[in-house]
Length: 69
Image 1 (cartoon, rainbow, N blue to C red):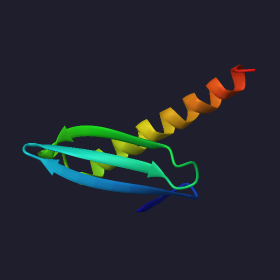
Image 2 (image 1 turned 90 degrees about the vertical axis):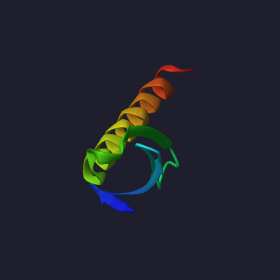
Image 3 (image 1 turned 135 degrees about the horizontal axis):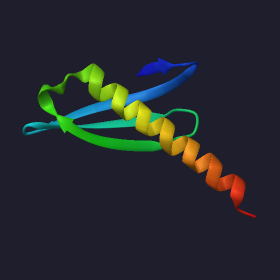
């Protein structure tokens, strides 16, 4: 688990051969995203990429919910 700008993000790493599946879950919104990267890329890089994707998805959902009636 990591705390990013006042929020909790759960991070899970699962190695599959030469790849690693990284899942990030925002604890407040329960939004979940996954990425797959090279096993030799390093956990910090993969974690940053997963959190960036999580941020993108949450922002996209906010924008979409604001345009619906």
